[in-house]
Image 1 (cartoon, rainbow, N blue to C red):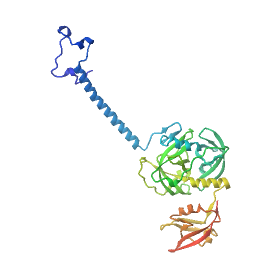
Image 2: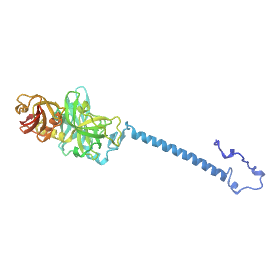
Image 3: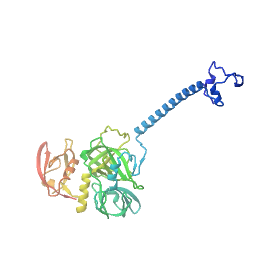
Image 4: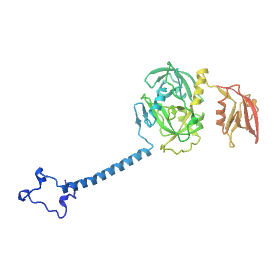
Length: 392
């Protein structure tokens, strides 16, 4: 069907005489039936070019809108590669993923009435794996599946219920371990990655997050408190209760636990400008790898976690520091002369801004260490000495 502006409908057009009534023919008419005149060719090409330009413009506009929608959407489509699945499967460089993924394992927890999967990290090549402790309660058996598909029965070496960390052991040697990074090398606003394992896939599950801060105190739904946590903005929750936090270079900097996922109260995390759009982001929290490794070493060597204990209950003081609410009778603080109402401002070389900072400072000391304590009583600053005892 011709277009409405077909050349044959132009005003003033005079149709040629029938071929049999003409005295001559143009050579082009001898080439075959129904030839296309040069004028028609020119008009057809012009019209075609116009519509081609319009079509290209529509395609470009549509593509641009689609690209904007993808970049601006918080619900990014799941990605998938040969080695990873998840919303950021293609964002983590393959070299980084290949250095950390072999050390991330799937742990199947079998209970009397249910079974489920959590993520663990091979932290020693002799088969020691660290994971969250809460999901292991009541477990009848544990099965660890490595990234290369091998399955091992596992036994619990020990747990740290205060921090929701546990160490389990599998029969193996020469197992892959990750590279560990320094949290101080990560700046606010940097992109980091959360890596876990899914219940049904041996590949790593990868999501991106924005690093926010360290030193976060986290009050959880069961009434416990997690200290010195790493806070990041994550736009999708991991498929298992625990996961690994790493840098873009694939260096492990933290471990997310199941209890942190259920937190109801935390220090506010400031929004950070970033090229990664996370309009629906939620806060995720992880233990630093330095503290995690300390816990692992203690559990493997002694079966539990040990650090210095002062014997006080404190809360954040409005002026800064840890306000003493109560003192354990005959404990280190009591013997040092501290009383309820005192405000502890320093322990050893550490100046304290909060009560959580006191807990973190005590982690650096062992039983029988004698520490200097700075405090304020009735507006007067003073110092005392306390000999710590073991808290295990």
